[in-house]
Length: 177
Image (cartoon, rainbow, N blue to C red; front, side):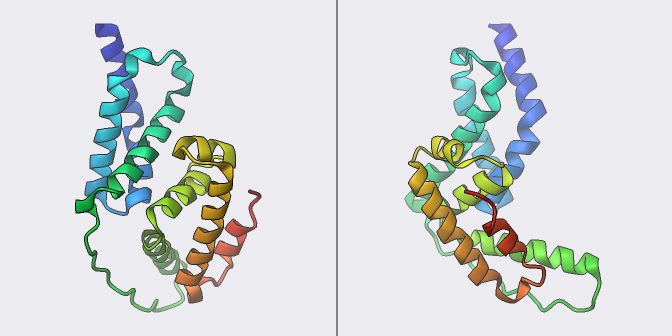
């Protein structure tokens, strides 16, 4: 029993930052991301004894994180109004400022997507999962993944509007489904 706890503790120490970044991309709030990571690791820890293939633990954690996020967004106290600020215009031709403002704009556009669309985009383009793996992680059909991806990319294009100087969103949309 001590050996299992040590294995789980070592896994958590090694992977918590990666899981936390993924959780942040899902929810857009570091505090909520920390809660998601904690809930995910509690669920994984409860089932750690039943995991037979320790090479696929990352897949199990991703699935648990995605499903925890979607379950939490359905809770009534998470459905509150969130205020957002408009982004200031980018001043100057600096590429560092442009890069930072693009990241901020993309993160803001990502937060405007529905939870399901956000989960699909993060799974497909941040975690680099294919359609079948995304469907398995989210517990839905591959057709749902494809339609949610299409709607999410169209919404991102709409939200990003003038920012598309290098057609970054078109490059993502051209990626094979």
